[in-house]
Image (cartoon, one colour):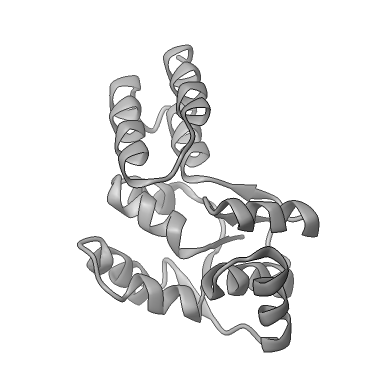
Length: 165
């Protein structure tokens, strides 16, 4: 089971990786209600995500603990969507959180929750042969233009893709 925050969900949709990921992920894909409202707020990728939610390929669940949510937001300087994703992961016993938010990643480490970024999902898709090298490099360029990644992260991802199969 994986829990998404809105930033990673949007990044994957914008780079046309989301459908590939959903089609090949063997377990449940969940988002909290706040992430649902954030991704439904607009943008050209919104209809795609709404379709996945309506088709029950992405499940929307309610977070039960508002007090924990406020504490996480304060302690880690994260927004409500990231806080709800963390709480939902703890609440549901999720094995993985998809986030590209630096503070949410720090919270995952402190809470001992496994996490994955959009770039890691892209690299994994390439390693599994779901996309070829040229397509992976093109999608990495898109991620770089949409996301807030440091040069070292992009360079490392490029090396992994170019050095791969």
